[in-house]
Length: 201
Length: 111
Image (tube, rainbow over all chains, first blue to last red; front, side):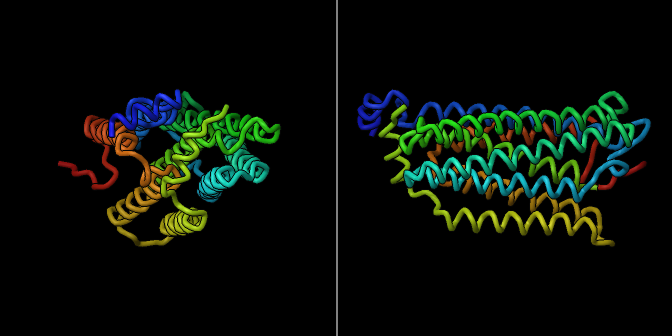
C-alpha cells in the first residue's frame, strides 16, 4: 500500500507520501487553525456577553430578518460552489464558471449586507468598536468573518475569470475544490455565528 | 496546470451526486427556517430554546462539512486534521466561558 502510494506520488508532484494531495492537506490544516482562531473570538464574545456597562446591547441593534437573509445567501452559495465543482468534473467549463460567478455574487451580496449592518449600527444605533464590550467583541468577530468572505469572493472571481479564459479545465479540479473548502468553511463559521451571536437570547 | 492523477482520483472517489447536494441544501434551508421561527415562538423555556438552537446548528455544521466539504468521503487523515483543531476550538470556548462565568445554557445561580 505504501509502495503504491510512493509510486503514485512519483508521477504527480502534488501527491505526498500518504498518497494525498498536499495542497488539499495544507488547506485542511489552515482550516483547522482557523477553527481555533474563530473559537477564540466566539469564546471572547460569549465571555463578554451581558457584561457591558453601557448600551446599546445586542437586542437593541440586531436585525434578525436581515441576518437570516444573509445566512440563506451563504447557504445557497455553498450549494452553488458544489454545483460548480460537479460541472467542472463533467468538463462543462462554462457552466462551472457560471456557478462560480453565482457563488461569488451571493458572497458579495452577503458582504454588502454586512457593510449595511455595520453602518446602521455605527450611524443610527451608536454602536462602534470602542462603545462597549459588546461592540468590540461583536465587530471583531463578525468583521474577521466578513474579511474571510471578501477574500473568498476575490478568490472565486479569479477562478471564474481563469475558467472563462480557458486556463482552468477538469484537470484543475483540486484547485477549485480547495477554494470550495475555504468557501464552505466560511459558511460553517457563519452557521455558528448566526446561532450563537444572533439567535441565542 | 494539468493534474491528471488528481482528477482520476476524484472521479472514482464515490462522491455525492448533484441530487444529494440539492437535498442537503433543502434540509439546511428548512433547519434555518425552523431556527429563525423558533425565536419568535413565545413561552419556550430558555434552556430548551438554547439547546435546540445549538443542536440545529450542530446538524447544519456537520451536513456542510460532511457533504459539501466531502469530509464524509475523504481520507481519515483529512478528517483528523480538521476535527482535532475543532475539538480544541470548542475547548477554548468552554474554557473562556468558565473563566468568565458566562453561561448561555444554564440560568445563573445567585447565592
